[in-house]
Image 1 (cartoon, rainbow, N blue to C red):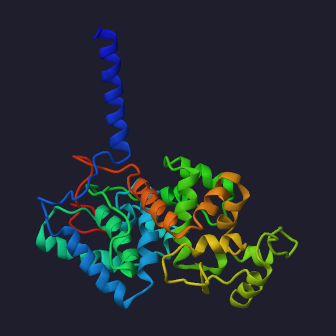
Image 2 (image 1 turned 45 degrees about the horizontal axis):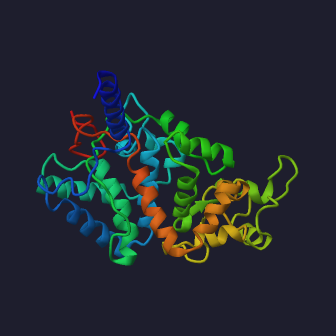
Image 3 (image 1 turned 90 degrees about the horizontal axis):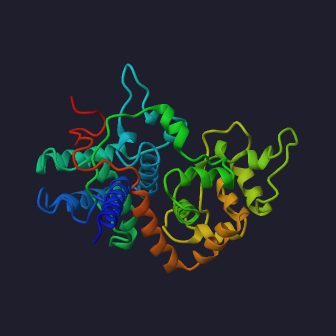
Length: 327
Protein backbone atom coordinates (compact mmCIF):
# COMPACT_ATOMS: atom_id res chain seq x y z
CA UNK A 1 0.00 0.00 0.00
CA UNK A 2 1.52 3.37 -0.96
CA UNK A 3 2.08 6.08 1.66
CA UNK A 4 -0.62 8.42 0.28
CA UNK A 5 -3.32 5.75 0.32
CA UNK A 6 -2.26 4.60 3.78
CA UNK A 7 -2.42 8.18 5.08
CA UNK A 8 -5.86 8.68 3.49
CA UNK A 9 -7.25 5.51 5.08
CA UNK A 10 -5.90 6.50 8.49
CA UNK A 11 -7.61 9.90 8.11
CA UNK A 12 -10.90 8.19 7.29
CA UNK A 13 -10.61 5.93 10.34
CA UNK A 14 -9.78 8.85 12.65
CA UNK A 15 -12.61 10.99 11.26
CA UNK A 16 -15.04 8.08 11.53
CA UNK A 17 -14.10 7.44 15.14
CA UNK A 18 -14.56 11.12 15.97
CA UNK A 19 -18.03 10.97 14.47
CA UNK A 20 -18.69 7.88 16.53
CA UNK A 21 -17.88 9.73 19.75
CA UNK A 22 -20.16 12.64 18.82
CA UNK A 23 -23.08 10.37 18.10
CA UNK A 24 -22.72 7.82 20.85
CA UNK A 25 -20.05 5.55 19.41
CA UNK A 26 -18.85 4.74 22.92
CA UNK A 27 -22.32 3.83 24.14
CA UNK A 28 -22.91 0.10 24.23
CA UNK A 29 -25.25 -2.62 25.41
CA UNK A 30 -24.89 -3.64 29.05
CA UNK A 31 -22.26 -1.00 29.81
CA UNK A 32 -22.60 -1.76 33.54
CA UNK A 33 -22.36 -5.54 33.20
CA UNK A 34 -19.10 -5.69 35.22
CA UNK A 35 -19.16 -2.43 37.22
CA UNK A 36 -22.78 -2.68 38.42
CA UNK A 37 -24.43 -5.88 37.14
CA UNK A 38 -27.84 -5.13 38.71
CA UNK A 39 -28.02 -1.52 37.48
CA UNK A 40 -30.62 -1.98 34.74
CA UNK A 41 -32.69 -4.35 36.88
CA UNK A 42 -32.78 -1.81 39.71
CA UNK A 43 -33.92 0.96 37.35
CA UNK A 44 -36.63 -1.23 35.83
CA UNK A 45 -37.91 -2.50 39.18
CA UNK A 46 -38.39 0.99 40.64
CA UNK A 47 -39.78 2.50 37.43
CA UNK A 48 -42.30 -0.33 36.93
CA UNK A 49 -43.39 -0.11 40.56
CA UNK A 50 -44.02 3.65 40.24
CA UNK A 51 -45.75 3.39 36.85
CA UNK A 52 -48.07 0.69 38.25
CA UNK A 53 -49.51 3.30 40.62
CA UNK A 54 -49.11 6.38 38.36
CA UNK A 55 -50.03 5.89 34.71
CA UNK A 56 -48.97 9.45 33.77
CA UNK A 57 -45.27 8.71 34.33
CA UNK A 58 -44.40 7.17 30.92
CA UNK A 59 -45.29 10.41 29.12
CA UNK A 60 -43.31 12.40 31.70
CA UNK A 61 -40.14 10.32 31.38
CA UNK A 62 -40.33 10.23 27.59
CA UNK A 63 -40.59 14.01 27.54
CA UNK A 64 -37.83 14.41 30.13
CA UNK A 65 -35.45 12.32 28.01
CA UNK A 66 -36.35 14.29 24.86
CA UNK A 67 -35.90 17.67 26.56
CA UNK A 68 -32.61 16.52 28.08
CA UNK A 69 -31.12 15.28 24.80
CA UNK A 70 -32.11 18.34 22.77
CA UNK A 71 -30.27 20.67 25.18
CA UNK A 72 -26.50 20.10 25.46
CA UNK A 73 -27.00 16.43 24.50
CA UNK A 74 -28.16 13.54 26.70
CA UNK A 75 -26.20 14.60 29.80
CA UNK A 76 -28.91 14.92 32.49
CA UNK A 77 -28.52 18.71 32.47
CA UNK A 78 -32.32 18.93 32.66
CA UNK A 79 -32.14 17.48 36.19
CA UNK A 80 -29.86 20.16 37.64
CA UNK A 81 -31.36 22.72 40.03
CA UNK A 82 -30.80 26.44 39.68
CA UNK A 83 -28.14 28.07 41.87
CA UNK A 84 -27.77 31.59 43.26
CA UNK A 85 -25.79 32.53 40.14
CA UNK A 86 -27.55 30.49 37.46
CA UNK A 87 -31.05 29.72 36.22
CA UNK A 88 -31.11 26.11 35.09
CA UNK A 89 -32.97 24.44 32.20
CA UNK A 90 -35.74 23.44 34.62
CA UNK A 91 -36.84 27.09 34.79
CA UNK A 92 -37.53 27.39 31.05
CA UNK A 93 -41.23 27.49 30.11
CA UNK A 94 -41.16 24.19 28.14
CA UNK A 95 -39.72 22.44 31.22
CA UNK A 96 -42.00 23.87 33.91
CA UNK A 97 -44.47 21.05 33.32
CA UNK A 98 -41.87 18.26 33.48
CA UNK A 99 -42.41 15.71 36.25
CA UNK A 100 -41.00 12.52 37.70
CA UNK A 101 -37.82 14.04 39.17
CA UNK A 102 -38.59 12.43 42.54
CA UNK A 103 -38.63 8.97 40.94
CA UNK A 104 -35.29 9.61 39.21
CA UNK A 105 -33.89 10.61 42.62
CA UNK A 106 -35.28 7.40 44.13
CA UNK A 107 -33.56 5.32 41.44
CA UNK A 108 -30.28 7.20 41.89
CA UNK A 109 -30.37 6.74 45.69
CA UNK A 110 -30.79 2.99 45.29
CA UNK A 111 -28.02 2.75 42.69
CA UNK A 112 -25.64 4.75 44.89
CA UNK A 113 -26.27 2.26 47.70
CA UNK A 114 -25.51 -0.66 45.39
CA UNK A 115 -22.71 0.77 43.23
CA UNK A 116 -21.52 4.18 44.49
CA UNK A 117 -20.34 6.58 41.78
CA UNK A 118 -20.91 4.22 38.87
CA UNK A 119 -24.26 4.82 37.11
CA UNK A 120 -24.86 8.21 35.51
CA UNK A 121 -28.05 10.22 35.87
CA UNK A 122 -28.06 10.56 32.06
CA UNK A 123 -28.31 6.78 31.69
CA UNK A 124 -31.01 6.65 34.37
CA UNK A 125 -33.13 9.12 32.37
CA UNK A 126 -32.65 7.12 29.15
CA UNK A 127 -33.54 3.86 30.86
CA UNK A 128 -36.50 5.38 32.73
CA UNK A 129 -38.01 6.58 29.45
CA UNK A 130 -37.74 3.11 27.92
CA UNK A 131 -38.80 1.18 31.01
CA UNK A 132 -41.79 3.38 31.84
CA UNK A 133 -43.21 3.13 28.31
CA UNK A 134 -42.43 -0.61 28.23
CA UNK A 135 -44.38 -1.36 31.44
CA UNK A 136 -47.61 -1.65 29.45
CA UNK A 137 -46.04 -4.45 27.38
CA UNK A 138 -44.17 -6.11 30.27
CA UNK A 139 -41.04 -6.27 28.13
CA UNK A 140 -38.52 -3.73 26.80
CA UNK A 141 -39.79 -2.31 23.50
CA UNK A 142 -36.54 -0.67 22.42
CA UNK A 143 -32.87 -1.12 23.17
CA UNK A 144 -31.04 1.46 25.27
CA UNK A 145 -27.28 1.69 24.86
CA UNK A 146 -25.53 2.96 28.01
CA UNK A 147 -22.27 4.63 28.99
CA UNK A 148 -23.38 8.28 29.11
CA UNK A 149 -21.78 10.58 31.65
CA UNK A 150 -23.30 13.63 33.30
CA UNK A 151 -22.77 17.26 32.32
CA UNK A 152 -22.14 20.09 34.76
CA UNK A 153 -23.77 22.99 32.88
CA UNK A 154 -27.48 23.76 32.75
CA UNK A 155 -28.72 27.12 31.43
CA UNK A 156 -32.27 28.36 30.93
CA UNK A 157 -31.19 30.11 27.71
CA UNK A 158 -30.01 26.81 26.16
CA UNK A 159 -33.43 25.26 26.77
CA UNK A 160 -35.25 28.16 25.12
CA UNK A 161 -32.89 27.97 22.12
CA UNK A 162 -33.03 24.22 21.53
CA UNK A 163 -36.36 22.68 22.55
CA UNK A 164 -38.73 22.59 19.54
CA UNK A 165 -41.86 24.68 20.08
CA UNK A 166 -45.45 23.40 19.71
CA UNK A 167 -45.97 26.54 17.59
CA UNK A 168 -43.28 25.57 15.02
CA UNK A 169 -44.10 25.14 11.34
CA UNK A 170 -42.52 22.30 9.36
CA UNK A 171 -39.46 24.27 8.27
CA UNK A 172 -38.60 25.21 11.85
CA UNK A 173 -39.14 21.64 13.06
CA UNK A 174 -36.93 20.20 10.33
CA UNK A 175 -34.18 22.71 11.14
CA UNK A 176 -34.42 22.02 14.88
CA UNK A 177 -34.02 18.27 14.36
CA UNK A 178 -31.31 18.66 11.71
CA UNK A 179 -29.20 20.59 14.23
CA UNK A 180 -29.21 17.41 16.31
CA UNK A 181 -28.35 15.24 13.27
CA UNK A 182 -31.90 13.84 13.19
CA UNK A 183 -33.78 13.43 9.91
CA UNK A 184 -37.33 14.25 8.81
CA UNK A 185 -38.03 10.55 9.33
CA UNK A 186 -36.87 10.83 12.97
CA UNK A 187 -38.96 13.97 13.42
CA UNK A 188 -42.15 12.22 12.35
CA UNK A 189 -41.42 8.99 14.23
CA UNK A 190 -40.53 10.75 17.49
CA UNK A 191 -43.64 12.96 17.20
CA UNK A 192 -45.47 9.67 17.74
CA UNK A 193 -44.52 10.05 21.40
CA UNK A 194 -47.52 12.39 21.54
CA UNK A 195 -49.67 9.28 21.63
CA UNK A 196 -49.36 9.55 25.44
CA UNK A 197 -49.48 12.59 27.67
CA UNK A 198 -51.35 15.88 27.82
CA UNK A 199 -51.15 19.40 26.42
CA UNK A 200 -51.91 22.66 28.20
CA UNK A 201 -54.56 24.84 26.58
CA UNK A 202 -52.25 27.84 26.16
CA UNK A 203 -50.00 25.83 23.81
CA UNK A 204 -52.73 25.27 21.22
CA UNK A 205 -55.71 27.55 21.99
CA UNK A 206 -54.65 30.10 19.38
CA UNK A 207 -55.65 27.42 16.85
CA UNK A 208 -59.18 27.65 18.26
CA UNK A 209 -59.68 31.37 18.78
CA UNK A 210 -57.04 33.48 17.06
CA UNK A 211 -55.32 31.54 14.31
CA UNK A 212 -54.97 34.62 12.10
CA UNK A 213 -54.01 37.49 14.38
CA UNK A 214 -56.94 39.82 14.93
CA UNK A 215 -59.49 37.70 13.04
CA UNK A 216 -60.72 35.51 15.92
CA UNK A 217 -60.76 32.52 13.58
CA UNK A 218 -59.93 28.82 13.97
CA UNK A 219 -57.17 26.94 12.17
CA UNK A 220 -58.85 25.61 9.00
CA UNK A 221 -56.56 22.55 9.08
CA UNK A 222 -58.02 21.45 12.43
CA UNK A 223 -60.92 18.99 12.31
CA UNK A 224 -64.02 21.09 13.11
CA UNK A 225 -65.61 18.48 15.40
CA UNK A 226 -62.36 18.13 17.32
CA UNK A 227 -62.02 21.93 17.49
CA UNK A 228 -65.54 22.19 18.94
CA UNK A 229 -64.62 19.63 21.61
CA UNK A 230 -61.40 21.47 22.47
CA UNK A 231 -63.37 24.71 22.89
CA UNK A 232 -65.46 23.03 25.59
CA UNK A 233 -62.22 22.33 27.48
CA UNK A 234 -60.27 25.51 26.72
CA UNK A 235 -62.74 28.36 26.96
CA UNK A 236 -60.32 31.24 26.46
CA UNK A 237 -56.92 32.10 25.04
CA UNK A 238 -55.64 32.92 28.51
CA UNK A 239 -56.34 29.50 30.04
CA UNK A 240 -52.95 28.08 31.03
CA UNK A 241 -54.20 25.58 33.62
CA UNK A 242 -56.51 23.14 31.82
CA UNK A 243 -54.93 20.08 30.20
CA UNK A 244 -56.32 17.79 27.50
CA UNK A 245 -55.02 14.43 26.22
CA UNK A 246 -52.81 14.64 23.13
CA UNK A 247 -54.36 11.37 21.93
CA UNK A 248 -58.05 11.62 22.90
CA UNK A 249 -58.80 7.99 22.00
CA UNK A 250 -56.16 6.22 24.13
CA UNK A 251 -54.17 8.83 26.12
CA UNK A 252 -52.49 6.32 28.43
CA UNK A 253 -51.73 3.64 25.84
CA UNK A 254 -48.51 3.73 23.85
CA UNK A 255 -49.67 2.93 20.31
CA UNK A 256 -49.74 4.43 16.82
CA UNK A 257 -53.12 6.17 17.24
CA UNK A 258 -51.33 9.53 17.07
CA UNK A 259 -50.82 8.99 13.34
CA UNK A 260 -54.42 7.88 12.80
CA UNK A 261 -55.58 11.04 14.58
CA UNK A 262 -53.20 13.12 12.49
CA UNK A 263 -54.74 11.80 9.26
CA UNK A 264 -58.14 12.92 10.60
CA UNK A 265 -56.70 16.42 11.18
CA UNK A 266 -56.82 15.85 14.92
CA UNK A 267 -53.22 16.73 15.79
CA UNK A 268 -53.36 18.90 18.91
CA UNK A 269 -50.45 21.27 18.33
CA UNK A 270 -49.48 23.40 15.35
CA UNK A 271 -46.28 21.32 15.26
CA UNK A 272 -48.37 18.14 14.87
CA UNK A 273 -50.46 19.54 12.01
CA UNK A 274 -47.24 20.77 10.37
CA UNK A 275 -46.22 17.18 9.60
CA UNK A 276 -48.96 17.02 6.96
CA UNK A 277 -47.63 20.08 5.14
CA UNK A 278 -44.59 18.26 3.74
CA UNK A 279 -44.68 15.34 1.29
CA UNK A 280 -41.79 13.38 2.82
CA UNK A 281 -43.24 13.76 6.32
CA UNK A 282 -46.74 12.82 5.17
CA UNK A 283 -45.40 9.69 3.46
CA UNK A 284 -43.75 8.71 6.74
CA UNK A 285 -47.01 9.32 8.62
CA UNK A 286 -48.70 6.92 6.18
CA UNK A 287 -46.06 4.25 6.78
CA UNK A 288 -46.50 4.54 10.54
CA UNK A 289 -50.20 3.73 10.29
CA UNK A 290 -48.85 0.17 10.43
CA UNK A 291 -48.47 -0.52 14.14
CA UNK A 292 -45.47 -2.83 13.83
CA UNK A 293 -43.62 -0.34 11.64
CA UNK A 294 -44.19 2.34 14.25
CA UNK A 295 -42.79 0.28 17.12
CA UNK A 296 -39.74 -0.75 15.08
CA UNK A 297 -39.00 2.76 13.83
CA UNK A 298 -39.65 4.40 17.20
CA UNK A 299 -37.01 2.20 18.81
CA UNK A 300 -34.46 3.10 16.13
CA UNK A 301 -35.16 6.84 16.34
CA UNK A 302 -34.99 6.76 20.15
CA UNK A 303 -31.58 5.11 19.91
CA UNK A 304 -30.40 7.91 17.59
CA UNK A 305 -31.89 10.61 19.82
CA UNK A 306 -30.36 9.01 22.91
CA UNK A 307 -26.89 9.39 21.37
CA UNK A 308 -27.04 13.15 20.72
CA UNK A 309 -23.77 14.79 21.85
CA UNK A 310 -23.24 12.29 24.65
CA UNK A 311 -20.38 12.61 27.11
CA UNK A 312 -18.47 9.33 27.36
CA UNK A 313 -15.11 8.02 28.50
CA UNK A 314 -13.36 10.66 30.63
CA UNK A 315 -15.75 13.50 29.71
CA UNK A 316 -18.30 14.74 32.24
CA UNK A 317 -18.79 13.11 35.62
CA UNK A 318 -20.98 10.61 37.46
CA UNK A 319 -23.10 12.82 39.72
CA UNK A 320 -23.61 11.63 43.27
CA UNK A 321 -27.00 13.38 43.27
CA UNK A 322 -28.83 14.06 40.05
CA UNK A 323 -29.93 17.60 40.87
CA UNK A 324 -26.49 19.02 41.76
CA UNK A 325 -23.01 18.78 40.29
CA UNK A 326 -20.32 17.07 42.36
CA UNK A 327 -18.44 19.40 44.70
